[in-house]
Length: 452
Image 1 (cartoon, rainbow, N blue to C red):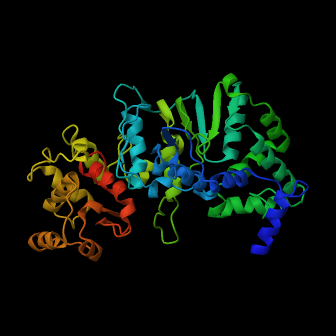
Image 2: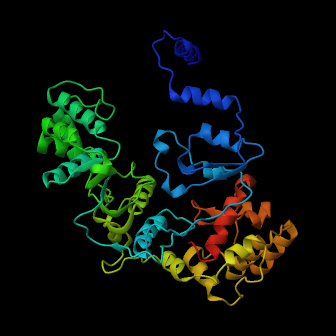
Image 3: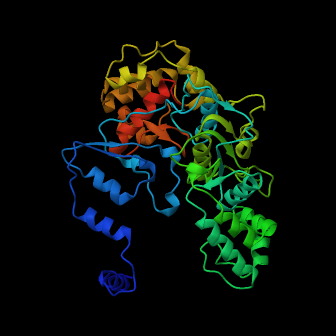
């Protein structure tokens, strides 16, 4: 590969070459120069979907305060090379932001259903001053869809009702899809990256109807078959700018970072099907993160129609708006005294709940029966005081309390590095000390009742 890469780079650098000089090229060249930004503070937002080159530039700043901001459970673009820079960010302080000012408690409850599935250590709290509702909405400000085809279908439906419609990002994507579909309908192969594997329109129809992998293409097939290519292209040309629109239509991906008063969720977010044995399939992690982003775009009213199946998945009765999972219920009502987490961050352990406080057994019941309540309280105190535990002290704790811990915990002997092992479904210790502050913050939030 190296000779081909060298030839390609020579062509890129040649002003008469065939290959274009792309954005990524000059970004990498700039990063290799090790730039130092003339600023007292450098902040990188949306760290969960970072360009790794840019993240490294920010981390390499000397003499500036560096702040990384993001939500690891809103990572949407890993499929195109983005990384969750928060996961390995070398910071001295880690702070959890759990209070939302965008929406009220009902929408926060809906978001927490998805955060629970994602095993987030922190749940979101709604703004008590916001009057929000999860209910039907016949005149939404925004319609959010999973696919571009469904977005165009929603736009055409509302145009037919006389509404001026805008599509976030414009309609060029759907135009290219429609033209590619037209090529297939006329018996020609297409170069469109989503459709180039199909040899005919009939082959695409069969795939969308009969293969679980074709469900994201089904809205496109239904759209083309229902309206025809010419009508879709005409409607795509009729969309207006957002400032002139009565309704804004967007894919969930493009809605990231946006908000509207009233939001309707389209029905192309699919509930997991059953496997051959009749067992319910798990919700893919990236789908759960996309759903979490989608339900948190509304400020006042959320019509969650396309994602309402989550209640059936979790076993939540229709009359309830909050999940019934014990861990989520306990997280909702097990609030410790105000400011306990911040006191612990400052090393003040004086307000650590008493040994007989029911919170300890509640957390154990919800999280991990292998950890005794006394041990949980001990972890709280150790992290709060930043005390380093010697191997002898750890052995004494294990011996006197008969605590069931992994060999890794026994060998390392450092409770200040405690973290959640999702594969083993228990609390343990990471081997990388560089990540330890993140896990300390997660445990503090979890143990204080702010998260799971």
